[in-house]
Length: 91
Image (cartoon, rainbow, N blue to C red; front, side, top):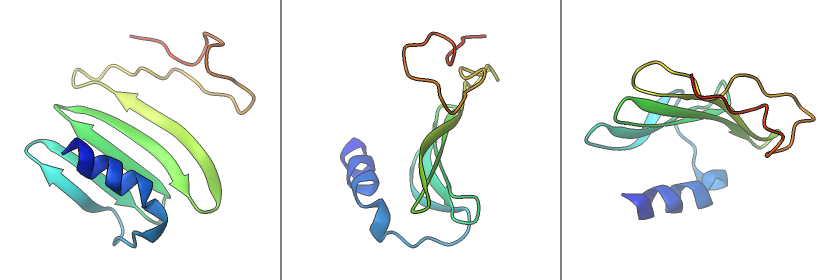
Protein backbone atom coordinates (compact mmCIF):
# COMPACT_ATOMS: atom_id res chain seq x y z
CA UNK A 1 0.00 0.00 0.00
CA UNK A 2 2.72 2.49 0.97
CA UNK A 3 4.68 1.80 -2.20
CA UNK A 4 1.47 2.38 -4.21
CA UNK A 5 0.94 5.74 -2.51
CA UNK A 6 4.56 6.76 -3.16
CA UNK A 7 4.25 5.70 -6.79
CA UNK A 8 1.00 7.64 -7.14
CA UNK A 9 2.39 10.81 -5.55
CA UNK A 10 5.54 10.67 -7.68
CA UNK A 11 3.47 10.55 -10.88
CA UNK A 12 0.77 13.11 -10.10
CA UNK A 13 1.34 14.94 -13.35
CA UNK A 14 0.41 11.84 -15.34
CA UNK A 15 -2.85 10.98 -13.54
CA UNK A 16 -6.12 12.19 -15.09
CA UNK A 17 -8.86 11.12 -12.67
CA UNK A 18 -12.57 11.92 -12.81
CA UNK A 19 -13.93 14.67 -10.51
CA UNK A 20 -13.56 13.54 -6.84
CA UNK A 21 -12.84 9.98 -7.86
CA UNK A 22 -11.07 7.49 -5.59
CA UNK A 23 -7.64 6.90 -7.09
CA UNK A 24 -6.79 3.97 -4.85
CA UNK A 25 -8.35 2.35 -1.79
CA UNK A 26 -7.64 -0.54 0.53
CA UNK A 27 -9.74 -1.31 3.60
CA UNK A 28 -10.62 2.03 5.19
CA UNK A 29 -7.71 3.84 3.51
CA UNK A 30 -8.20 5.85 0.33
CA UNK A 31 -6.72 8.54 -1.86
CA UNK A 32 -9.29 10.74 -3.61
CA UNK A 33 -8.59 13.42 -6.20
CA UNK A 34 -11.03 16.29 -6.72
CA UNK A 35 -9.84 17.68 -10.03
CA UNK A 36 -12.17 20.70 -9.99
CA UNK A 37 -11.02 21.81 -6.52
CA UNK A 38 -7.39 20.84 -7.18
CA UNK A 39 -7.25 18.76 -4.00
CA UNK A 40 -6.06 15.32 -2.97
CA UNK A 41 -7.48 13.66 0.15
CA UNK A 42 -5.56 10.87 1.87
CA UNK A 43 -7.58 9.11 4.54
CA UNK A 44 -7.31 6.09 6.83
CA UNK A 45 -8.86 5.12 10.13
CA UNK A 46 -11.12 8.17 10.12
CA UNK A 47 -8.22 10.61 9.86
CA UNK A 48 -7.91 12.62 6.68
CA UNK A 49 -5.31 14.91 5.15
CA UNK A 50 -6.41 17.29 2.37
CA UNK A 51 -3.68 18.71 0.15
CA UNK A 52 -4.09 21.46 -2.40
CA UNK A 53 -2.03 20.42 -5.39
CA UNK A 54 -2.43 20.97 -9.10
CA UNK A 55 -0.30 22.25 -11.99
CA UNK A 56 -1.29 25.87 -11.28
CA UNK A 57 -0.42 26.16 -7.58
CA UNK A 58 2.13 25.15 -4.99
CA UNK A 59 1.62 22.25 -2.60
CA UNK A 60 -0.56 23.36 0.30
CA UNK A 61 -1.77 21.45 3.36
CA UNK A 62 -5.41 22.46 3.72
CA UNK A 63 -6.72 20.27 6.55
CA UNK A 64 -5.62 17.44 8.80
CA UNK A 65 -8.55 16.08 10.79
CA UNK A 66 -8.55 13.17 13.23
CA UNK A 67 -11.23 10.52 13.53
CA UNK A 68 -12.49 12.30 16.66
CA UNK A 69 -13.00 15.49 14.64
CA UNK A 70 -9.95 17.30 16.02
CA UNK A 71 -8.19 19.64 13.64
CA UNK A 72 -4.38 19.70 13.66
CA UNK A 73 -4.17 22.81 11.50
CA UNK A 74 -5.45 25.98 13.13
CA UNK A 75 -4.46 28.53 10.49
CA UNK A 76 -1.85 28.84 7.80
CA UNK A 77 -0.62 32.11 6.39
CA UNK A 78 1.11 32.45 3.04
CA UNK A 79 4.31 33.76 4.65
CA UNK A 80 4.46 31.11 7.36
CA UNK A 81 7.37 28.70 7.49
CA UNK A 82 7.35 25.26 9.10
CA UNK A 83 8.70 25.58 12.63
CA UNK A 84 7.18 29.01 13.31
CA UNK A 85 5.08 27.24 15.92
CA UNK A 86 1.82 28.80 14.81
CA UNK A 87 0.56 26.45 12.09
CA UNK A 88 0.00 23.23 13.98
CA UNK A 89 -2.24 22.99 16.98
CA UNK A 90 -3.59 19.80 18.53
CA UNK A 91 -7.13 20.33 19.79
